[in-house]
Image 1: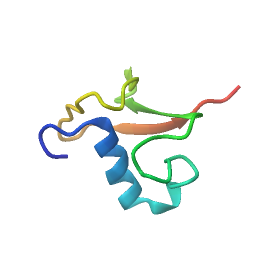
Image 2: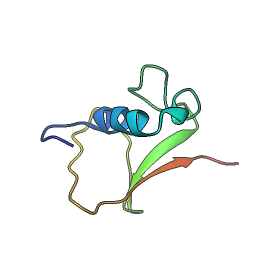
Image 3: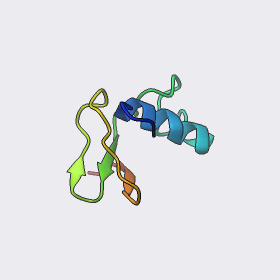
Image 4: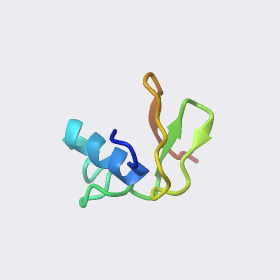
Amino acid sequence: MPSGAVWRDVIGALAQEVPMLVGKAITRDRRGLLPSYLLNLGGRYTIQDLDERAELREGDLISLLTETC
């Protein structure tokens, strides 16, 4: 991701790489997640604000998770 990217940009890149997620986990505009989904960074940090700067390092693991009851 380029310097200054926010989490919405990460979601957009994910949508480009895995288009089948659009409408299932990623919003149709490719800028957000559907309500039951969230991003997690490295198993330690849940992304709360998609407009927050995404400070990623090479090798970081980003998980797309769904909430279950």
